[in-house]
Image 1 (cartoon, rainbow, N blue to C red):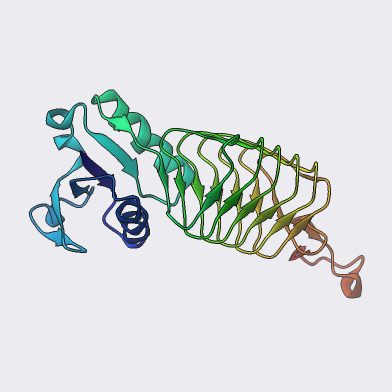
Image 2: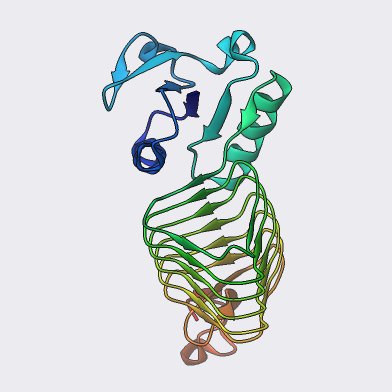
Length: 224
């Protein structure tokens, strides 16, 4: 079986390692939006062309190696429209409960733990060393960065991005399109389409510096 990896960049290297660890593919090739890469090799794998060349690959399995959630979702849809079939990749060192559900197009990186009853949507990235505890529900096109920890019964909405080393406590909610900053600790909720940072995590907002209270100064961005 052949595998097409869309994206011959840094994330593509990691996805290639995951694919190789499964020993499931006879040949792995890359596609890339950069037309100058066609005909070259990347990590000893051929770059066979641009996404416009997908149609002749109909029926081949693919994975999108793009970190940005929105861009990855667009590529995911385009590949399916051309008749490609999404693969699901789980690194050989990951521990995934038999009762967990992993969506099509999702990549589970090295050292990940996904515990019982959790469901991860399609086209997600669960990056190295992340822990997804029991009964979590993660929507489609989510990116969990390295060493994220989700407590039990956490809900993560579609297109959310949880930063490196962030912790989400049990039963907390990360809203759709939310961004959780690196190292943040979400106690109850990260609002949809917002950004939270710090310990405990708080929404980024603009506040007036108390030293200039009452003066005509622009507000500054509060980091926590």
